[in-house]
Length: 323
Image 1 (spheres, rainbow, N blue to C red):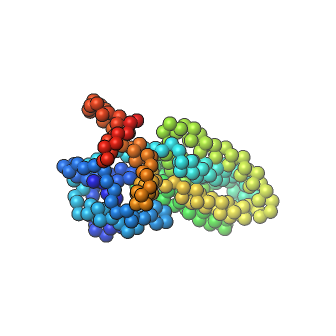
Image 2 (cartoon, rainbow, N blue to C red):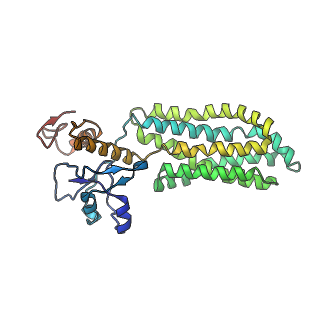
Image 3 (cartoon, rainbow, N blue to C red):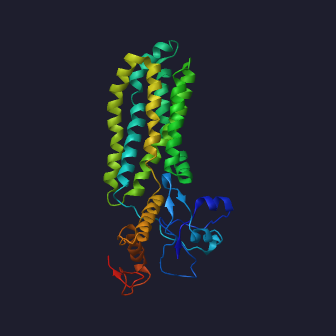
């Protein structure tokens, strides 16, 4: 059988299922007890953000199993459509906000110089240089955190950190404090935003990956052009300190864009539970992502077995589905 794992019960039980891998829509049962796929507990529901409610008995029974008893399963396949374009939109917005703020620093520098009269031109330029250099230099850190906590959490954390750094930088009274807060802390926040926003697109696309990534990184060019004009207009009205404060609010919108970066596994989980609701209502089962995954797994087994059923799936009611 295949069953869903309720994460809240897993956390309470304290079990460490080390070898358990999430397949995107189900967890494989023990290797020694193969059985046709069956989805139980038609009353399972999804809460806000895709969290599970009312866990199934089958999912609860999985908590009693050892992690060594579970079979390894293939990772989810990129859908190349649907919700993936919302991920592209979120990545586009993150790139526009990050690079727009970074490359508009030159517009603010002459106005910042009027507040720090004792600072040399090279010291003033360090504010923008440290900001850009730090957000690119923190790539390995951002990558490690994204692997541990997911792209969504890292991007939202980076948006919060940058917003606080920019807001604090609008009140500093020395150029050294400005470089440290605006440049260094803001750069770390931008680094947490930039890399996960670009990487996450690749998880959702395979055939259209180059096209989707190209759209996402277009945000950098558009943001650079728009923010240069926007920053110049804001400085005339609010001064450079007010402009930095406004930029802090704009950058925090990366948290909204980052909320689009839903894990691919959760996406397939939602599709699976929707299919179960259709079955519970007596509606015909839609041939969608679940069957596509079964056919894909069968295709991967061709190098092991060359039987006559390669490329075909036999359902529990003896219907044969081809590629």
